[in-house]
Image (cartoon, rainbow, N blue to C red; front, side, top):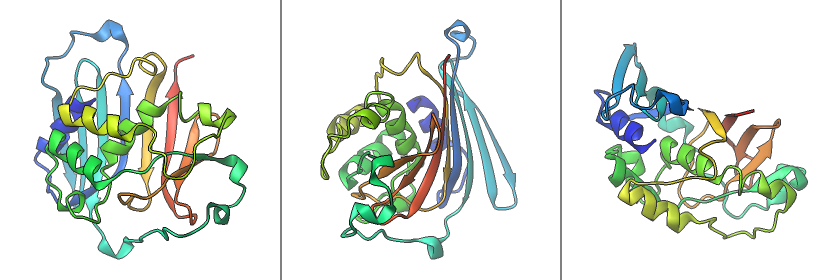
Length: 224
């Protein structure tokens, strides 16, 4: 997965764009060895929109990138009570991403976009995808049955940061389960923002802030 992330940051795409949508697919193990170790990549430009595609032995990554619109920058209300988002029984308390973790990830994958480097940083879309992958199913689906986390819990965020810094993440609990993750971004995700998941179906989620701001939608396809 991280080889594909690095391929995207190294592609001939302007550094001031952001990801509008992202899709990662895992290959069937029988396809191992079909591709070289270096991902095969393609970039298409249509006006100010870029489409990126990369594939290697492990899977493929597809992204649509658009210019960053600072007018849509909406900082969440950090003091809001989670009850403002509605029925809390349908929510899963997920993660927050510290600037330290964000910066470690951008260094690991070579992401030079300045919006991920500021103190008030925007969390990279690829980092959110990787974290969702790692947390499935032990955290995300497990919390549906036992929401024992308290505000401020990091859900292994230090481990995520160190794994991404070294660029070698092993996730055996999900490798044989997830076939595809698709994400559509609606608003920026800022560092240190506590994120909640609202289930929209068996494997569909909307990620929101404590004050109800809709950040992105996730659709997961799992093996039968």
